[in-house]
Image 1 (cartoon, chains in turn red, green):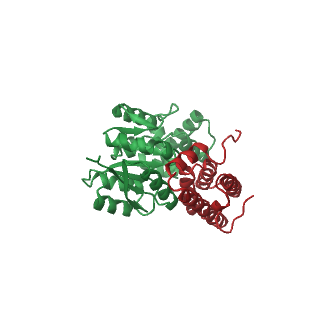
Image 2 (cartoon, helix red, strand yellow):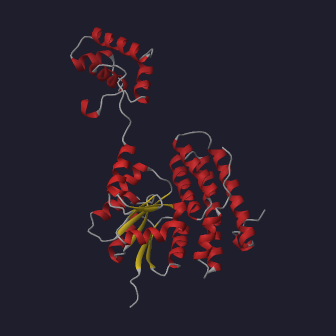
Image 3 (cartoon, chains in turn brown, red):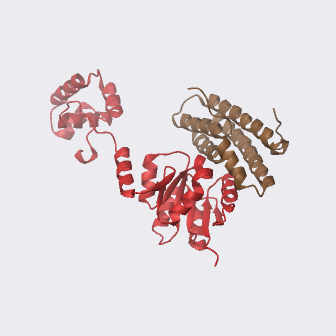
Length: 128
Length: 224
């Protein structure tokens, strides 16, 4: 099936931005916190996959899915869901799922950088 | 006189989600976020102490999971109405949440779009499911119950005794064990097995066990 989702769901982003119109700095901070937390969570996932800690993979992937869904990063959420399901089935596709999450997260970050400027990029990360 | 604000408690283990929800809800002049909980235990404590009108409850939280917190809430004589936040629609989970007293279910990727409307609907005494208020909860529960019922058990033409033999085979019993259990000879067990193999098209005990488990060819619990 072709991947027709955009990295960031515009409707979610726009509505959230409207809801936080009185606090634009807080809006940028929210997405920066999301990116920082998501990259950190991805690192935790890589370590859990390396050590074959399936329960931790499931819990951490679920955690990443949660914030990604609320903030409109649906593609990241979808790949996190796939990783969660893969870990539950004791499959061997976890490395592939991890790379898909990383790719989707980079896309979200790049799109946010275009929309909000470099301030949204967490410390230690660089824009594309 | 100013309208009474809807007092909301947010319970989600993810800080970014809590901040996002808080900011979004605070933009609604009719809603006031009175507290935030990071896990199920904190959600219960804050629900009891703050007595919010609405509890937004994530189902997947550490310590006490959301569903267990909901169960506690139901037995806690609180007037707080709970809206469940979930990552995906699992009909079995939705049914369980409604049976435990949840008044609404909102998908996490739809909170920005639906949450305020859901909170208002629930405050007006309605239920909220699949992005809209529910007019007939009884019908919804009936439909969900039908959709989540286990598939009908198939017997593949096996007799009651043959099904019982299959159940023991899946438990790893030998012919001798089976003969002893039913008070029959091992020869009779072998005849049963031959008939079972022929009816199911399997060639050995392992294939039989796998077929039985994969195709739900076991006596119903109450028949055992």
